[in-house]
View 1 (cartoon, rainbow, N blue to C red):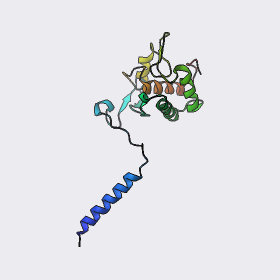
View 2: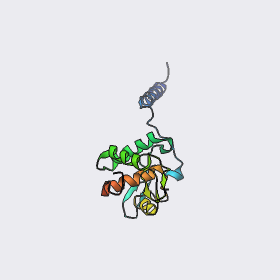
View 3: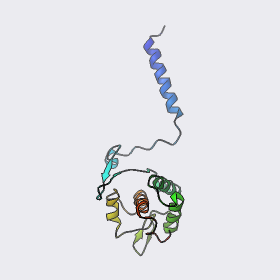
View 4: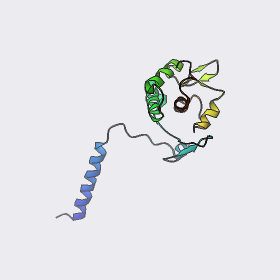
Length: 158
């Protein structure tokens, strides 16, 4: 007869596999290098003294408009904005066609057409220092947080 520890080990293994197989497909995220992520629960203190998550709404925004929409929905859910996610997506669609590389000669760039002149200060203020205005995640998060605090008045398409 097999040793009782073997039965226990086999039962634990079976239980663990069952739990893993029960997880919904697509919930796992690819790991980021530690230096890029700054630790699993990294936080950045903004210049205004607010502590904000360093990585929120972690969608692969470079993969196209569908992922940009997911990112906007996530951010609009996290920081409530008037009109909700639908309004935020409409504004971004009008401003840039949901294109993170969009630029106009007036000096506005990114998904929500942020002013390139004010972008560095805004990125720091909202806890995303050193991120480019063309970084889809940073542009969306800063814009949604601005709309959360002050409404959509800063955007011509609102």
